[in-house]
Length: 302
Image (tube, rainbow, N blue to C red; front, side, top):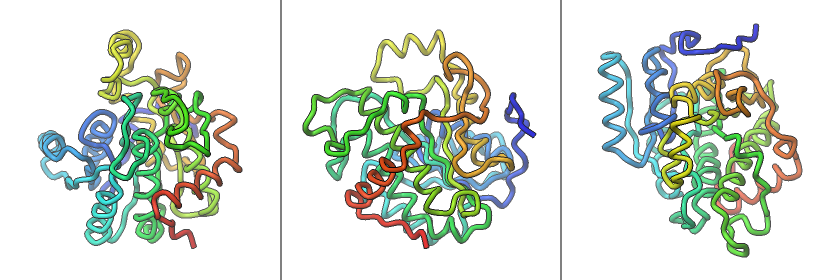
């Protein structure tokens, strides 16, 4: 049965389940690990800022003194960091129930990752592509596991130039690059789901968008800082879309959850459809091959 006002009370007990959440030291990721730990999940806070991550851990333990919270350093803009993180996690955990690829940057000034990728496609897509590939064997060996990629309504403005993924031949557009990275999240979701066998495959692969939520992602735009105060919903509401995709028993591979109201900017998560372009199989295959070439990571699908 579909529920149209899905909220924190719908999250069942998550005892003995292991969740990895990237970018969980602030914003949507922080709200996600707080809610999951409240329901007794083991949560791995995967983020760059260890001090901020430890602060989140302390906040969680004040809510649930018995919570199992693990802080691990992860910089999605560094393939070396991703490799190190994956080695630690694969050794420490025999199972991973859910990987939530949440970390991201938005509309930031032009710069490159440690490996020379445009910062937004590099962090938001390529970093998570590599991370997922390196954790996939453990996810596949975990019964009823899931991968959730956090996209955005901004994917609707994306139109990836596969001959210039890193914006080296064109004038850089901050919002264009962001839209491309969020469209890439969806191409990745649907292509990985196809490769794993969709609903018969394990893990299930889903996507979510948080609507327009008040987070630090908007720090590069004065306009959006003002708009936050007028339109934005609380980050705790925005985080529910990813949580629902991660744990709702009715959710299936390829599902896309998000806020439905006010142009998909507000509201509790429901099942939606991403835009038509995001389902383009040829583009998804192109991005997959290009991502493998750029990251050097090939997922263990078989």
